[in-house]
Image 1 (tube, rainbow, N blue to C red):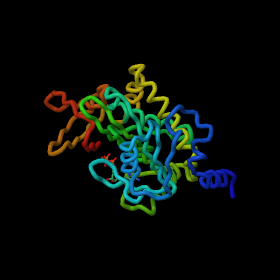
Image 2: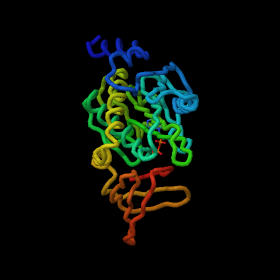
Image 3: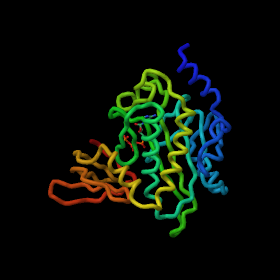
Amino acid sequence: MPWHQFHVKMTENSLSPAAITDNLETRFIGQRVIYYPRLTSTMDVAKRKAKQGAIEGTVVLAGEQTAGRGRMKRAWLSPKGNIALSIILRPSSAYLSSLIMVASLATVHCIEKVSGLKSQIKWPNDVLVNEKKVCGILTESDVRGNIVDYAIIGIGINVNLRLSEFPEISPTATSLSHELGRDVSRLDMIRCLLVEAERLYLALPAGESVYQEWRDRLVTLGKKVQVRSGEATYRGIAESVASDGSLLLRQSDGSLTKIVAGDVTLRQ
Ligand code: ATP
């Protein structure tokens, strides 16, 4: 067995909370990991744990998900060998709209660091490698008035997904192993994600840098797009994004429409 495969096998066997938290250079994100070999959805369990008072930074991690979800009740496939995790945060309401930026930038940085692959962000919540979806991100929160009880970042990454086994997504999806032609260590990716997510999260109060880098990484800007939001469909050029994450769409009549990164579907 070539050394890199052997190494991946070794580290995969040790995908345990202890292996993840061992000397992890974070203050709170990932210092507590709740691991389930098989789980319906890390989002649902994280929500329950957050309601029960789990401390900020608690991570719910699944070896595989049986009912993973994307936005608008869409299914997210997350079989063995991939990453499905949710991070419980307790931010001030001012930072809620930035969490999607934190999650997508952390993913982009770690894909590059761990696999060497370049990735890009498709507004509002996908990370792409070679124009195909490698990661989906969800953020959910419970806010009463102006008080955030909890916010949860969910990250699903196709690390070692064999596309031939999932024809329903293979035209639009890819995985790190598919792009590289070899398996990639989930442990290395997870540890990197936790460190990067914390670094970016803690950088939010300092101002513009997270937003600016997120904006610069968007493949969407300058492109002709079609956005579906509820019953409405908008067409135009994706001109820019605001610091709250919403998309500014220039329509053919010259008007500029602000589209909030909620339940929208974007086609390029
Ligand atoms: P789209 O990516 O079609 O614009 P979206 O961003 O709203 O939609 P998400 O909610 O992020 O989609 O993800 C759900 C969709 O992603 C599913 O409808 C399915 O088409 C696709 N999908 C499901 N599992 C995976 C996966 N593991 N990798 C890539 N794509 C997936």
